[in-house]
Image (cartoon, rainbow, N blue to C red; front, side, top):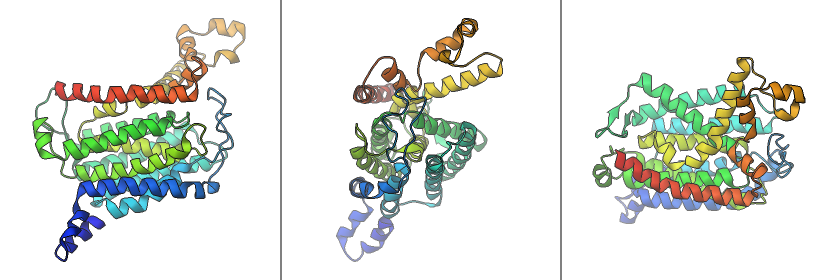
Length: 373
């Protein structure tokens, strides 16, 4: 809103041109959303449902039980006016924003439910949201990709783009959701991803001299998405102030699904799906391996194998269980549960070590991605 208003007001007073500066809007959005969440969140979280604990967590959910959960709905709703005020959006970008809030809303309904939704129900809703987001991104100019080993941009037809983009969005949504289990972990890792993507969108993909030097197609609207990403990152930082171990409030599915979908969306707007490995390697390994284990166990059960946990079996049944199933149960997933339950890492150790690993991997992988190109 302010961007378009600034264009009209420049004729009356020159300094109004600051309202059309993407860098000014980016900095303002980050600060304003961060301060707003920091001030308002503790005054509103009494309205949230209480966490019931997770039976499959390393500590059986004892640390989180009874805390306000679903704070993602408050954070995203506090950030929304800042987005509408400071981010210049076209029709299709606004459509993408709608899909983000649909994902948040579905996650919040799950947080609110006394009986958690089934994985198939949540998975189907994620598919619908992912397809809708992919369609809006494509119509907003997201059909051109820059890929490894290819010098020029590649135009992907819509019939290939939609299913592949939707699959990426579905995966990032659920991988981030699976990583939410240690105070500050999913939020801190995603904050690193969002700041990395904001810098990439503003300083590389949206800046023609740098993009041309790196043989990357310039995306005219990239700087606008950098403002959006920075705005959400600021709000996430305000939330992490209260989610630091020991946390006072929990993000819930409402926040983790929103953030996971946003990370996937920014990667698609940047024009290279392989960037997801660069900006979120720890999230993909931590949450993605959990999804892989779940899919393998479902497939093995369909094939007739006994996939129950070893503690639920009699000694005779344990001896008959397939060695591959036993090996799957030997490791906890998401990986942070294995580190806590099997390696005896504290929550703080998990957080710091995972953040350090991603902080080192992201710049290294980005350089490799660019040089391979």
